Amino acid sequence: MRALQIKTTLRAVALGGALAATAAAPAQFGLAGGIGEAFRPAFTTRDVQLAVDMLQLDDAQKFILETLYEDYSAEFHTGVDGFRDSVASMRDHIDPQNPRQIMRIVFGTIDNWRVESRQLADQVMEDLRGLLNQEQLEMWGQYTRKLFRLKYLKNGQLPGENLDLLNDVRELSLDASQVEQLQPLLEEYEHGLDEALRRREQYLQTSQSDLIEAISNENYSLGIRVAARQVELRQGVRDFNETYTQTIASALPDDFSATFTDRIRQRTYPRVYRRTPADRAFEAAMKIEDLEPETLEAITDIWTSFLAELATFNEHLVQMIRDYKPLQIKHKVKQAAARMSDSTVDRLEDPTRAEFAKRNELSTRYIDQLKAILTPEQFASLPGVRRWTTPDRARVRSTTSGAAGQIKKRVLDYPGGPRPGVSEDKSNPPKQRKITDD
Image (cartoon, rainbow, N blue to C red; front, top):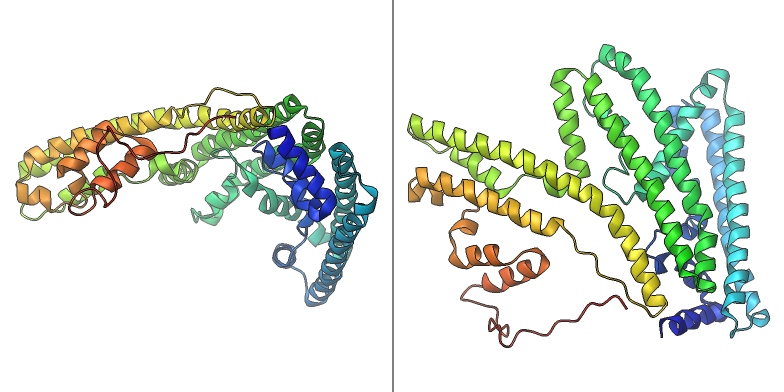
C-alpha cells in the first residue's frame, strides 16, 4: 500500500507537482532535505550588510555591491522560473506509469539548477572580492566563515549542534585585554567549527541523490545508511562545540567562566536547565517577611541540598538526552522505511520521560520539607503551590507522566471537575488513534 502511494506521488510529478514531490523525498525518511536549498537565494540583503560591516566597504564599494546583488537576485528568480518552465515542458515526454523515469529526469533537472544557482552566487562573491583592497582582503576568510555559519548552523538537529560560541563569548562583554588574551583560542575554534560544519553540509547536499535513488528504486536500506552518516556528521559538529565549550570556559576569568557555561547549558538543554517551580517557591520563601532566623536558616539548608541533588540529576538527564536524540533521528528514518516497504519496526521509547517525572518527585520531596517548617499561611503565599496542595494534582502527578499525563491534568483541573463531555471512568475511556509503525 505504501509503495503504491509513493508511486502515485511520483506520477503526480509528471502532472506538474515535480518540485514539491521531489523535494519531499528526503522528508520521506524524516531527514532535513537539502533540495529546498537550491530554490532559496544563496546571497541575501543580510549578506550585503554583513559585507559592508565586516569588510568596512566605502560608499563606492557599497554601491557596486548593491548593484551586484540586484543583478544576482534578478538572475536567480529568472532561473527559478526557467526551472519551472522546464519541468512543465516535460509532461509530454514523461511516462506517468514509470516513476523511476520521473524521479531521474526531474531530479536531474534540479541538480542542473543547483549547479547553475551555485555559480550565480559564486560569481557575486568573486566580484565582491575583486572590489577589496589589501586590508579588506585580510578579513575575507573571517567574513566567508561567518556567512557560512549564519546560513547553515540553524540546520542543526542535535542539542548543541547549532551553537556559535563566538556569539556567547561576545555577550560576556569582556574588556579589551581579556579578548586579546582569548583571541588565539577563538580563532582556533572558528576555523575548526567551519571545517566540521562544511563537512556536514557537503554531505547533506550531496546525499540528496542517494535519497532520491532510495525512493525511486525502493532501496530503503540506502536511506537508512544515509541517515546514519548524516547523524554521524551532526554529532561531529555537536562534539566540537561541546569540547570547545569546556576549553573556552577554562580559559575565561573565573567570574565569567560560570556565566558562560550556564548560558551554554540553558541554550543547549533548555528543558533541563530552566528554572523549576520549586526554585521559584524557595526564592519566594526566602523573602517572606518576619521569618524567624532559625526558619530562614532551615530554608537555606533545604534549598542548598535541593540544588545540589538537582544539579546531579540534571547532569544525568543531559547525558540521557544527548544519547537519545541521535537514536531518535535514525529511528524515524527506520520507521519511514518500514512504512514504505509495508513492514514494521519496534517503537523507540523516550527514556527521558520517566526521568523528568522522577525529577518532579525530587522537587516534591524538598517542597514537603519546606512546607513542614512554614505556617500554612506562609506556604500558601508561595507562587505555584497549588501544584503541591490540590489533591487531584497530586494524584495526577504521581500516576501519570508525559503527554497523556498533561492531558489528564488539564481534564481534572477544569473548574468544578472534569471537562464537560470527558469521562473519568476508566471502563469507558475516550477513543484514541492508535499509533503504529506501519
